[in-house]
Image 1 (cartoon, one colour):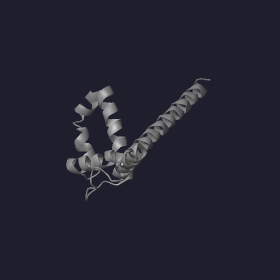
Image 2 (spheres, helix red, strand yellow):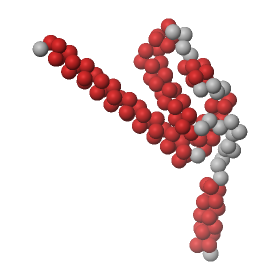
Image 3 (tube, one colour):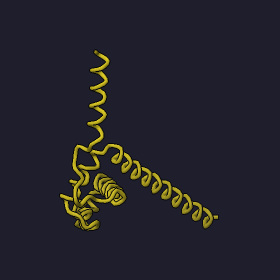
Image 4 (cartoon, helix red, strand yellow):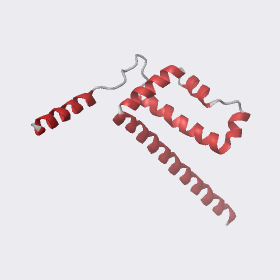
Length: 125
């Protein structure tokens, strides 16, 4: 009897996990665009924490900038973000793509700085 109850509980849990807790919004932001948005938000947040005065002196509001750039509004973004957050695998994939892009950008920047140093060394010699 215990095995039967445990089986039904496990079965119920598995079935309940199949449906999304949040319904798909009508104007869902495409997953690739969401990656771009999250990447830009990460960059802007880093800028704000490191050089917030640059954003302020150029009158850049990160949220307004994102919404204008991607032609979305705050409600569309919030609903899309909530939907992807309820789909944990998709949400993880989005952030994995953002992290990969950040790492690639850092590597490219390191290579560019290294080549600049090599050029300076050649000029000095």
